[in-house]
Image (cartoon, rainbow, N blue to C red):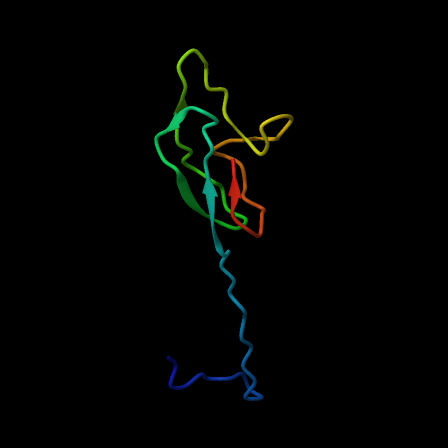
Length: 88
């Protein structure tokens, strides 16, 4: 809360909008495997950061993708650009 703002020589004050990205969830589908975490929260237009690990007997985990077949690889340096929650 501001009680008083000094203006310029013409008593004009310029104010600036400050924006923060909304927070969304990324859910993880381990496709018959298991994961160390089922979901994380991320902010729009920020680096995703931490991603959980996954495991499945007889398989090697190659990463989190946006689709089971032909999806895009998402990693810890991916910038989140979706305007809704997603499942990987």
